[in-house]
Amino acid sequence: MTSQDDSYLHKKVMPIGTVCELTGLSERQIRYYEERKLIFPKRTNKGNRKYSFSDVESLMDIANKMEDGIQTSEIRKEINKRKEKTSGDKIKQNMIRGQLNAQFNKGHYN
Amino acid sequence: MTSQDDSYLHKKVMPIGTVCELTGLSERQIRYYEERKLIFPKRTNKGNRKYSFSDVESLMDIANKMEDGIQTSEIRKEINKRKEKTSGDKIKQNMIRGQLNAQFNKGHYN
DNA sequence: CGTGTAAGGAATTCTGACACG
DNA sequence: CGTGTAAGGAATTCTGACACG
Image 1 (cartoon, each protein chain N blue to C red):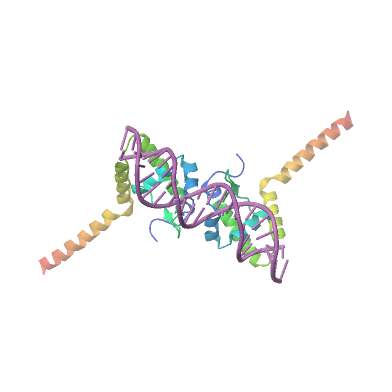
Image 2 (image 1 turned 45 degrees about the horizontal axis):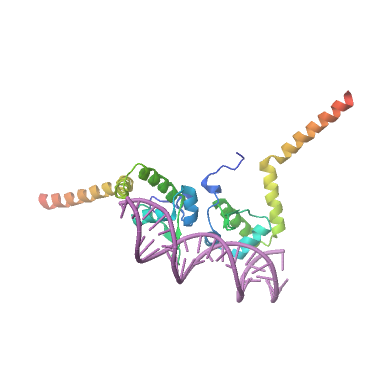
């Protein structure tokens, strides 16, 4: 289990049509934001997209930023920053560096 | 606003296919339980059913009861009982009766 | 870059009915 | 009673492309 639980918020259950209604976005826009790696719907066996409520929330965020004239590439960067903060990647990297230092010092002191 | 808020739990967003996967029931079964007034999906403009997570929960309850050999008519009764308890219908009816009595007594005493 | 659209096909869902029991 | 199924149609979704800017 990662930081994502399997609550209703993250279950991928809605077809794109529902997401259009909930967000006010067109299918074209929603698919394009996926192409730009801003959202990650699941796919059914035969290729149909399924979205979660958290996807819908993300899309409303994205829609606001697009209105402010922000480009998809920049929105992408913000998403990556948030991931970095919450996923503990920095911590992991520091731990690894710590171990490497320990190894180094060991060799050094013996 | 009634006792039902518009949280994700009650938003009607899933097509029947998703509900089949989540519950393990067939489309036939799900439509039949609707016919028997055990669940109440929304309809899109053109007639497609949309279900909420709470509908899914209800269906899993229903599935368990069906396995126990309980008939849809009895499940329906249980649902009505629960509604009666939580909706305050009895209180409302008592209030109306009270008012009628008041009216009656008024005419009686004047 | 971001989005609209027409095109053609594939997958989904719908209803009413027959079947079994 | 509860559920499976074949039937035919309607609605949804998908992809790749052309267009505009």
